[in-house]
Image 1 (cartoon, one colour):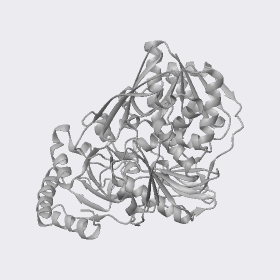
Image 2 (tube, rainbow over the protein chains, first blue to last red):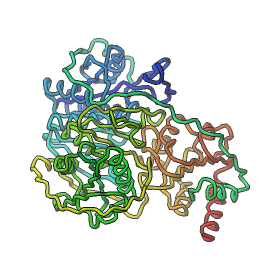
Image 3 (spheres, rainbow over the protein chains, first blue to last red):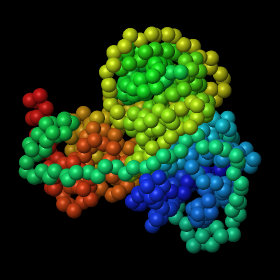
Image 4 (cartoon, rainbow over the protein chains, first blue to last red):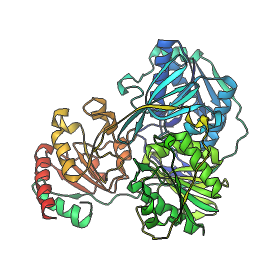
Length: 248
Length: 321
């Protein structure tokens, strides 16, 4: 089984978010970049298929040479090889289309990725790829098994879960539950050394135009001061929630 | 030209999300100087949609669509959009909405903006405000394609009544075998439990509660308030509570009216996930907890003393209403 894990290069979850150039650009100054946390669940599940079922694991991302350390980290965790599509990931459709072209050219059985990235949160790339490629697709995937070219996937629904079955090729967009948080892997020294020698292929982008663009960014309005209520005066809190906030 | 909204239902019944997205669609249609068409799939009674401005309602009834199938639903909405010459299509942000939207975007050849939190700020080009950076920021996205798809974030614009006489029409899209290549083997859904996605109020516990055995008072407080229960990431990682209750940057987003955080210090990742809640109350024994800076109301105190008092006082308060 040939697996492709699509990863995003995103600001670390602890990052403070700022904008520059008159609020038209994300300010990456001083920001640490990591593998998108949702994609880490997908990568870890892919490693399980590699170790238990002999699958091969390729990782791919869309971006400039600045994203290569993130691909190397995925190689250090255990992926076999990496592909970087050399263009800026400016729009969800553009990313989906670029990745789809690579998937068509290389041929994969199973595409694993996160259900969204924690930067632009579009949640659109996996589903768009599936429709572009005619692959089966499961979103918000919290469990995945593959036997004899057939997948059994669990997806989260509002208030529960649903078990789905389909044939490969398929795309599963994962989140916590696809693997447990404690099973996520941190690269060890041997992995980091080996990653340096693993192939990282740079491919030219397909000719795709953006369907959307960002005119500007805005930060949330700063909160007013928190009203403190004495722990022995719960009646006051209830009054405030009822009369002032009008939420109870 | 028209605006088309897909109003999803749960076992045939519309939830608040459906009325919110119809309210939103009506406003967008007015901005675009056109009419609003609402498409429904296997709904029991569509008359309530007239209250929120559905000029026309297309009702699809097909037993094959009884269980949700993202591709088949996207196909239905696509065919409805073609029939009505809709150039702006709106879907919700439930798990089903998020699942079908990107498939629909490709079918419509539409630029897709998800997580929309407000009415369009411009119609030419269509520009919408969206949540970005896991609610640590907003982006204003312009859509350049002829067809446009918007995903409305929950509890973002609320309901607006706008009574119209709706034209109701049956619609039978032609479904293909290709739409049903994924089959649903089983659904496990808790009934009678308020989900985080649907709740107006969410009561959430953190590591400050010391162990899963202390969640009784969280559940009781939630029951008194008709709230959903939630937890911080460490609590779900420790296995004290199921993953489905984890709220925060990599967990579920909270978009409720009221969020009560108990024994949660307020790490930046947690705040990102919950700051879309309209009102936040924090109960924590550490006056220096960062959550107080992001909250509307705070109590510094021992949760094991404050919460039982709060439960009793709320019960008294509820009985006087």
